[in-house]
Length: 116
Image 1 (cartoon, rainbow, N blue to C red):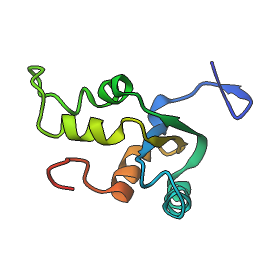
Image 2 (cartoon, rainbow, N blue to C red; image 1 turned 120 degrees about the horizontal axis):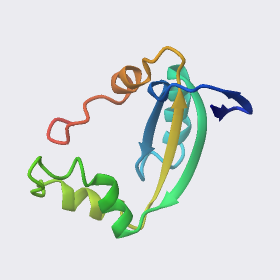
Image 3 (spheres, helix red, strand yellow; image 1 turned 30 degrees about the vertical axis):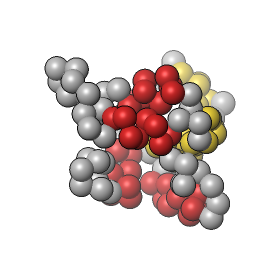
Image 4 (cartoon, rainbow, N blue to C red; image 1 turned 60 degrees about the vertical axis):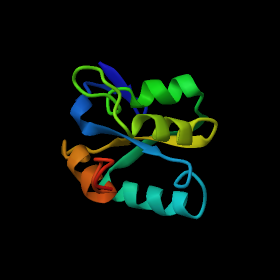
């Protein structure tokens, strides 16, 4: 059993999605517009602003910044350097239809850094 909005019940982890608002998106006026659009995808469970240390930025991007052999990809260093020392905002979404990832992908667009 898990607790969600004060109600104890079983929770399907597939109904939750994680979004990170990078520095430009974590400040107004973009922040309000992004959150408005995310609310169309699902319920915003929590948001939290954090300032990333170099180690946290590298940990956050390790999997997308390295290939299957562990070799660092070209975008890893620039993105972790960009995020270091800046405020970002973490957003946790809930969608009861288990479509939260598909809906976020439609909203956010391509997540491949070479195609964004």
